[in-house]
Every structure is written in C-alpha cells, then in structure tokens.
Length: 292
Image 1 (tube, one colour):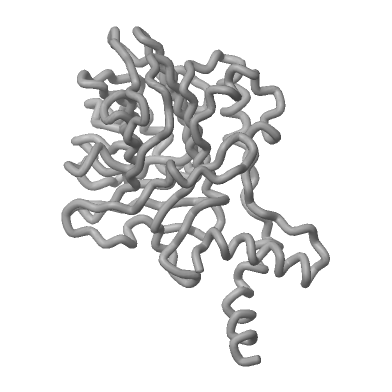
Image 2: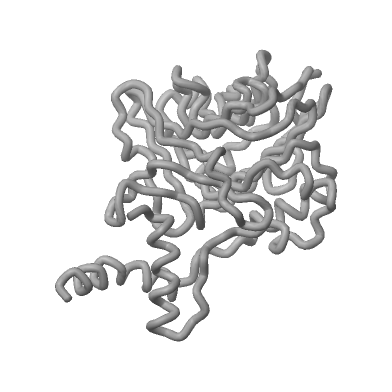
C-alpha cells in the first residue's frame, strides 16, 4: 500500500472512529485561492502538493517512489508524476517523506537522488514556477550549485550557488544569471520561492521580495518539457533541503495572481494532528484485521 492510499484510508478510519468527515487530502488550488484570475487558472500546468500524491515504498517506509501532481480541482495528473531516480551510488532513501507534507532530499556527496518526469505543457515563452521549502546551508559541493528544479532541460531553473561573500539565487538557461544573496533563508522550511519568465525577462522572488536577477535573457519553454526536481540532471548539482509544494503555470503571472499564490503557499496548513493520529493507527488496525 502506498502512502497516498494510506492517507485516504486513514481519513476514512478517522471518520469511523471519531465521526469526522473523511479528508481525501486532495488539494484544490482554485478553491483555496478563490481570487485567482481566469487567465491564471487556465494556465495551471500542475500542482505538486506534498499533502497528497506522494507514494512511498510501503506503509512503514519513508522512501519516496513517486510524486503525482493534481490539477486546480484536486484531480490527480498521473501523466506528470515524477519518479525517484539516481546517479552515482546514493540509495533511494535519500529522498524521504515525513508522512504528511514534506519531502526531504539529502546528498551523500558521492551521487544523489532526484525526481524526474515530464510536464504536459504547451510551447511558450511565458512561465511561472513557485515552490515552498528551503536549501540547507551545508550541502555537499555547495559552491558548485544546488538545483531545486530544472525544466526543459535548461529552459527555466532555480539554484543556490556561491556568491563570494555568501550564497545567491541563480537561474540557468544556457547562461547563468545571478541575483541577491539568499543565505539568510538557509534552513527556513516555510520559505516561498517564485520565478516568472517572459521572452526577454526573468524575475525571482523570495517570500514576495524581488531577488534582482541580472542579465538580459532570451527565454522559451519547450512543449511537454522534462522536469527534474532536486538536481541539474544526471550530472548532479543536487538539491539538499526540504520541499513541500511546487506549482507550475504556463503563463507569466501578474503581480496580483503571483501574490495570491505566494500567500496561499506561505499559509498552507499541514494535516491536522487528529488525522496523523489515525495514520499512525493504520499498522495496528491492519494487524488486527489480518488476525480476524
């Protein structure tokens, strides 16, 4: 049984034990962000929500196998699932799940793991990616760059790299573009990162603050672009840290829509303690059933 199924079953167990309405853990961005414009809604590609769609090796394991996104109404999008993939000698368990919302990526320094898949998007010069999580300060090879994601490949990316006196945000699309120092956000788990591109501009934000990316880019994103989370590619530059959300649009969100989604990501609730209690009871209840 996957963690995704376990979440749903745990909700129904709680309904029986406590009389609560079952929680399906299906994110519904259009309900959660009711002010989102029709144009933004129409350009949503995928919502990777750590509260749903994370499949682990089995009920008792925290090792992530896949992460399946949902659409704006909370319906699963299995064609855009990303899969635990590796390079070097790192074990699958270097991508783990806390059982409620958070994926943790570690890199032993001799090769790491990443999540790999493909989006279902149209070819465009306008794109927006928002994610919630953090970079760790002590990542192996930190001065070589640690990628949170790379889409295209190399059409739009987000990485933390050495900035001389600290660490800066960088994007790469054939040319590296650096922005402001982000060292102060190392290890801050609820940080919200946003990147918006057009054909000839790019802007990166942290918790809504412009990170002042330099340069004059030329941007485009291929149709059905590949997506890698937590690495540059099979060659490494692995992300070390946590990630709980990623939301992707095939448009350049305006400031109002971007702020709405950022505010949602900053305030998104994690599963309640009551539900987690029900999930913790699953192994016991399964054992009792098998004895009956």
